[in-house]
Image (cartoon, rainbow, N blue to C red):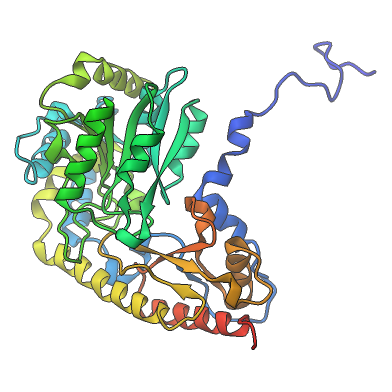
Length: 425
């Protein structure tokens, strides 16, 4: 057999891909949506625009444009010439202070800038926290349905995933008895997403208090994913998990991407809500800092702009975003109720999504939720996310954070698709 210059037989290289990464896209919303979009025939004569109701990124629509004060702050930071440097691995001190003050407004105690660690969006915050908690035999408790990025990162770090259910008949509250039943001495944390992705729910203070007491009983921390903080428009106000930081240690994950509608700016944070100092005593904070020493940093000029973004953004902008989301959530809920094969357990009260159940017995030639979404994309150029991508097979996750006219068009096409595929009596 022919040898290369190093003596290795041609075609017998010693390297190979990481098998965990090879399977990661199956747990990725982007991976699933890419597979669905690939079903669209680009040579089709259908000239209608594609309508994406599968991903929560409203930034392209004028009605969701970010605050002009935020843009001015970034421009000013760039023009100042002060933010072209490497930042400290934990983040610029003024940015950490501004975020600490911003989040302290909702808490019974005051956060220190030292409690705040800046990240490349909330996605990197998840990566970091799960890397910090990884140890042989550890398991983490995740909600189902839920954002599967947690499961993908857990798998990559060798952490076992155990799922607890969110209950659709109870406005997607946590099945706390079920959660307690799956925990053991190797459980390290439970994840609470509030406001909820993918369910559009907002937990009450009372329910969060019960979840906190369960975590204390189990001796685990809470990872509070609050990337949609304050994007609520129902009867329940947003309650930060940090309210209960004196009961159990809480790592709060957040970013500016949702409330300011700038997911591409990639500025997120990890915050230690831990007045009792448990995370210092257990060296979680030390490990977190060590990880930040070997990871990438969010753009320095965005960090430099954060104090002015928070200070100068008007209440009118924040109220406008909530108003549009309330309008589109109500419209989406009402239109979906008109479709026989789809049922909505509850109207969304927060975030940008709602979960709806498919009744496949009413449809002809549709095998499951992935098949439904693939054919919908091909026939109607409408992209929605199958429930299998969030751990709930034969459900759909639909975003209403789009321009109202596009949402109306997309839901009409969805209704038409269901009608065409409905079983005839």
